[in-house]
Each structure stands twice: as C-alpha cells, then as structure tokens.
Length: 112
Image 1: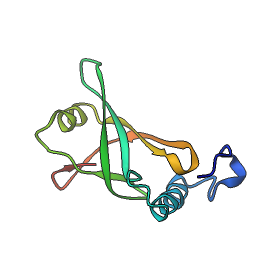
Image 2: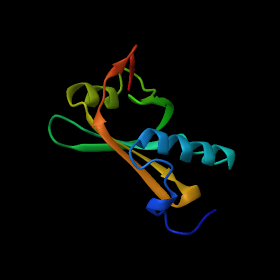
Image 3: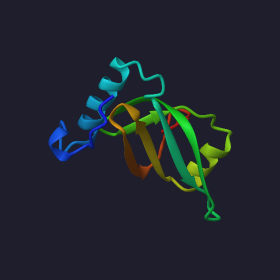
C-alpha cells in the first residue's frame, strides 16, 4: 500500500472523474481489495433527515454509477422523493476517498 499523500501529479485525469475512478478501481481490484466496489450512499428524506448505508456498485460509465437496491426499500423511496444523493468510495489502497454528488434515477426497476 502506498502511504504517501495523494497529490495532483499522481492523477490519471484532472478533467474526467470517471477516467480517474476507472484507474483507481483497476488498481484496487488488481491488488485484490475485496471491498473496492463498496461505497457509502447518502440520501435525504423529504423531512430533511439524512441516511447513509453501504451499497455495492454494479457498474459505472460517463453517465454515473449503478448500484442495486430493492424498489420497495427505504433507500429507493428516499431517492424517489429526493433524487439528490452522494456516493463515496473508500480507496484504501491509496489512502483516499472518492466522493461523487448528483441526482439519482431509476434504471429498469433498479435505483441508479
């Protein structure tokens, strides 16, 4: 594990966060980090309460991240009523976190 601080000169891309994430994810999976696909998802209910939980990423591309959840669960209901969310990946192999914010949308019965 590299214990040196993550600096800008170590970035693969300074303009494309998904290209950078792809590089970090490939490094983590090659190093056999079992939890590389896990992320903390934060959502907000209509009453203003915040919830977070760990989700497993199914895939990602330039449009965003896909994770799987029950359409009947609290997480999906919160995302339906308030699509604003935040997703943070712990990148233990580089001692950093990779946060993303945006809006969610349903993808074929799954919340994305």
